[in-house]
Amino acid sequence: MLDNINIDTILFLDIETVPMVRTYDELPGPFKGLWDKKAGILTRNTRGSEENAPTPGEVFERAGIYAEFGKIVCISTGILRNGTLWIKSFAGDDEKQLLTEFAEMLTKAAGKKVQYLCAHNGKEFDYPYMIRRMLIMGVPVPSILDLSMKKPWEVNHFDTMELWKFGDFKNYTSLELLAAVFNIPTPKDDIHGSDVAGVYYDEKDLPRIIRYCQKDVITIVNLFLKFQFKEIVTDEQIQFIVD
Image (cartoon, rainbow, N blue to C red; front, top):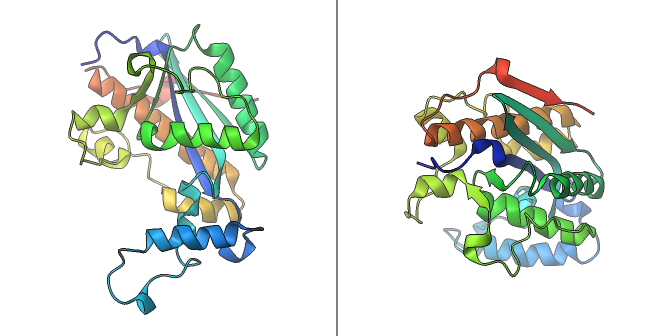
């Protein structure tokens, strides 16, 4: 499986997102009313009476997964070179700056060191979310990330969840579950995705979020290696790039 793909040409990535503000009451301008409409759609199929349906404020914790109501606080990347997995993260409170730095790196690397991108559930979440936030922040979208006007065979995006589906489009399999199935160290040994907003806004612990995001990247790399019937990388093979 995937024998014809040189894993050294793949940039693996994962993103962490949070709501644009900590609480529903802090939403600026028209966004409160717009979230009310979105929340209505999200809770439309809630069982029970309308009186028991969650309020827009109660479901605001889900805002981070929507690019219109959220923002990216970390992008972690990984690439294999001669048996070493190099990990680099772009993170911070200034979303435009981290997106700009990531886009510049991707533009320089694409077509030279990097020919493919790979994420878990990337086609439904990571890739479109990054493109949307870049457009909102006024950051030019790197060609390797941009899907507009490309034919299906010109899109060099891998998605480990899609690869695992084997055409079973109703199936969703988490990275944590696949890590367990393939006996890969779990990336969820500290926090989970639902904890990121609290860690960011309440604990103000961005380094913890970065570590969590990096663990996901390492797990995605190892999962791809398993798909190629290869040995996973060990801790001794991992190097972290710190500016």
